[in-house]
Length: 275
Image 1 (spheres, rainbow, N blue to C red):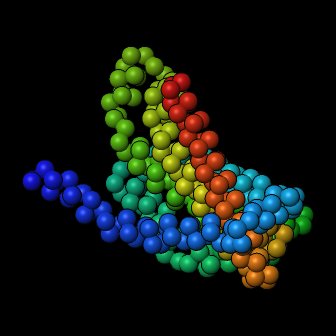
Image 2: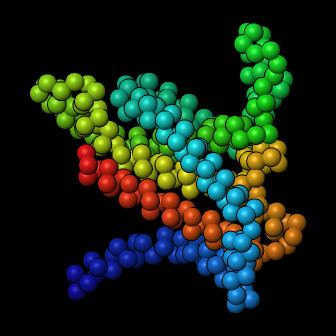
Image 3: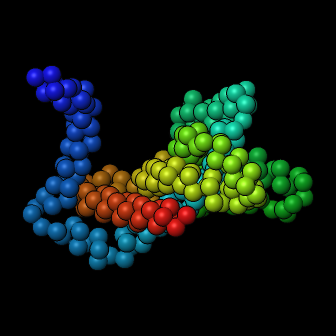
């Protein structure tokens, strides 16, 4: 009887979170998939696959998300290493700087970048006054501005998974390798970096998936010139009221995200085994 109660304990504890996920995640996804085949046909998917415009926008969205994830990984790895190895005071200061953007709305942060990156913004004025450029640079209404804004928003989501993995690494491993004659570079490439790959993978997938559905930042910093799949879906719903086609585009985006995630996972497993 006690064993049966112990078996029901974890299930009862997880019932509320599972119900929460089911109502707020599984049910909307199921409704989305059903809406894309509302009339019992795959015409919405055929339309999306036949038109090069929609496939091009999907590929551009995937490329933009990969660029953002790659830049976040390059910037987040040394930041996470600093937080994991610094003293408590410096680590607290680093966390404060990292979490400070969360105190303001993403809309406010995005509009702030329009002031920083505008033709008369802080960046262009600084470059003009120092004589590095002769005329203002076009930093808004293009892909560069969108990438800057998305990296600023998503960088903490990359730092935290890597930092969590780095905290669990036994520092005696590096000390033992150094005592056996390994150089610092060899210790990093053969011991430390492979152990942090799970965190880098988790952060990359998290940033990539969030970036796929970004709407506010591309809409404001892209100025209508950078079209992502999120903007395209919103346009189909708001302007054309074509819910089945918008649902089909969202389903294709979801499938692409799962495919990319599976590919990343296979690459990570192979890389970990090689190391």
